[in-house]
Image (cartoon, rainbow, N blue to C red; front, side, top):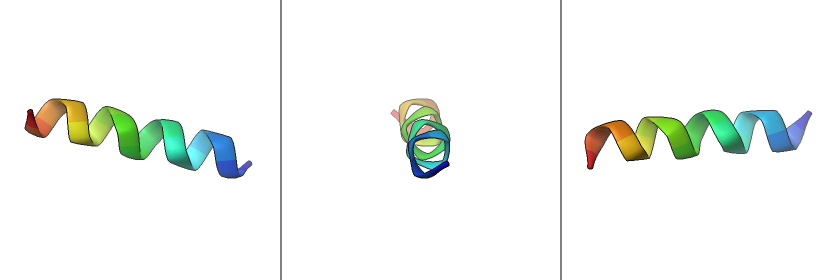
Length: 17
């Protein structure tokens, strides 16, 4: 489940980019 949270954070960071 940690991978899912990391993927969500990665998507949020990409949105900020």
